[in-house]
Length: 194
Image 1: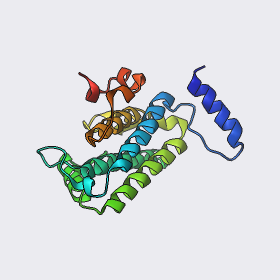
Image 2: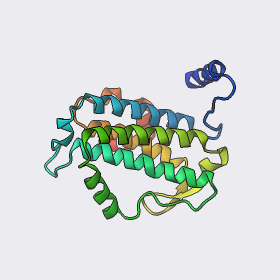
Image 3: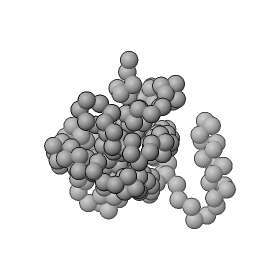
């Protein structure tokens, strides 16, 4: 038993009947990393002023607004895949094309600050709900990945965890390497190599 298992068992006892939980087949450690990464990202997003959401972070013009859109649209894409699995429908790719995905992020980055913050909040909650409601067998369902190859749906959780933690650093307003969980580094997130 781990501390996470003990905490989960205590939570179930406190919440009682009617509460819903991740399936036993769900990748619990990776879900924990993705969820804590979402909270970590939100902390740094909330520290940004509305004006600073649109200030360039790099010479290529990337702004925090672009980062917010990227993590929000990734959450929506993963959620769409989970919903398709749950409904026993064909699973869509994460994105139609990378060019269309980039155009969508560029357009989304022009949203007002309040809308960007709402987009992130809604997409994060929605993803968490569909993860929680995914039937156990769904975690091994084959889904198209960003590379076009088929992968078990559980792999999207690792990709989300790596991406959301890296996005907190992209905001460039105080995220620290020492805050990275050891399990995230052990998961082979290439974003943090070096």
